[in-house]
Length: 221
Image (cartoon, rainbow, N blue to C red; front, side, top):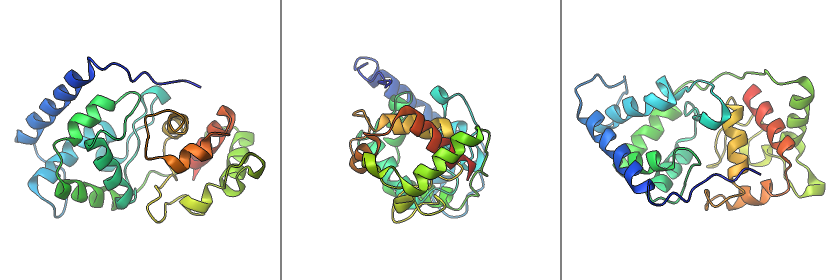
């Protein structure tokens, strides 16, 4: 399993500071904020900043797995709030965007985080895209619906809902980029997601092929 390199302790503070400085500059700029009903002016400008990576309305474009940015459109507000607060408290990391997300989230107060979460929850999610081989999609569907009981892996649908649209604080997975989902399934086996206790247990006995299969199936929904 690939182990993301997160031990660059000397460069992380500088990268985080650079990300924060860039956000301050963008928030202070006079560029037009995106259309965002309600919320503070800072929240409207923050949406504009987020769009640089996550796309207009939180619908990021597909990219190679190593550079994949998650789509936020349609995501549960409760889940988005929890993730942004974890980034702000430096209790969630990313293999390729740790310092940036730490720096950006450090400047978001609770009101702004709530506004961002509500905004993205109201956006139209990405449509399903099924470009994987039929056999891989079939395997992914079986894992999603039935799990792998012999391996101690529960059905994904039991927490994320029958259509993977999220439920009770569990994130929406339907339509999410397969590369990002596969990357996150692997990350749960590292120290980058300390709050992902449940997912650590679920992914511990999954093979890389199974991770790829369920990620491909979820993207197709």
